[in-house]
Image (cartoon, rainbow, N blue to C red; front, side, top):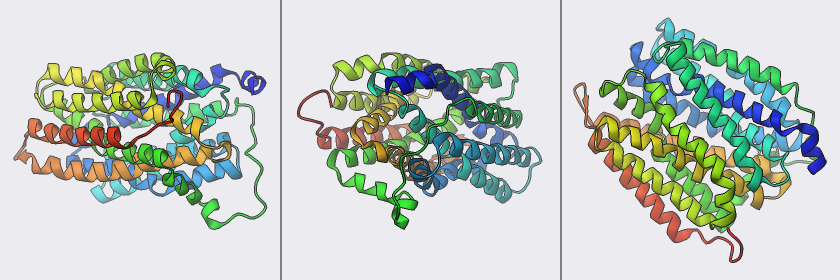
Length: 400
């Protein structure tokens, strides 16, 4: 394994994460402000829900392809190409103010290609490491740095916080990422079974992982946490704009600063602290984040955004490492895909629609009751914290 890791070169894995994170960061944060600036504010929750709908359909099948038939980098290459094409069409449609239904259709087509890609990249990287607990955090850090760099570039260089230019920059990012995958040495998928059932072809056999008590609690808690996490990017942007903040995309990079710091210290945390406490700390920071947002001041939002990176890293990234350590090798791409389905699919779909409904309920004319909006989300996140604390067991020995 060490020889294989040396052959592939960890620096290439870091660059891949940086490019992929930067590509997603070019347009992901700005989408809500671009939609508002072009008269599409009413469809913001539904545009973000497109990713969640796609996550119910594509990740498991894509994970099965990567586990059983095609190399991960080859699958990523084709998905990146489709993502580039439909991302360009989506932001062109917004720019030309096509009908809301057309914009939503393009958002959905783009999401079908784009949603599985980051889970696939994560699986690709994890499969090339000899000690994921020690090595993954420092590599995953580069995706965060890519996201931060893209946000700052869009906000401060392109000055495109509300411009479709951010989406077109994302298309260029996809082109560069696709080209870079050709530098990755080919790793064939595991040997195929001679006869595969439809459940195996579609990746549905990964669902049996939910029967394991702790696996099921991690998957379910990830989905529940993302019900409220789904509100972060679309509605934090709108809240900052209501408070008169101009460089909203650059402001949101505060969350990536703590995310980067947490990545650096993650291996030490996982080595010396029981896994359950790392998970609980992540959810706890999520509670504190939205509780601060409820104060409805710039300072409170800045601190809350700063805590977001801790919430994301200590739960979501730790969950990815958990799967790499606790799931058999031949199922790992599908396990990561199942996590994507629970997070970006079920959790985010319920979150974007329910938080979108809750946002509309908190609107009075052109004014949003932000303290009420965020207080309810903080309370829900606190309930997730209690659920995980009472139900996750962990191993009787070691740190998990």
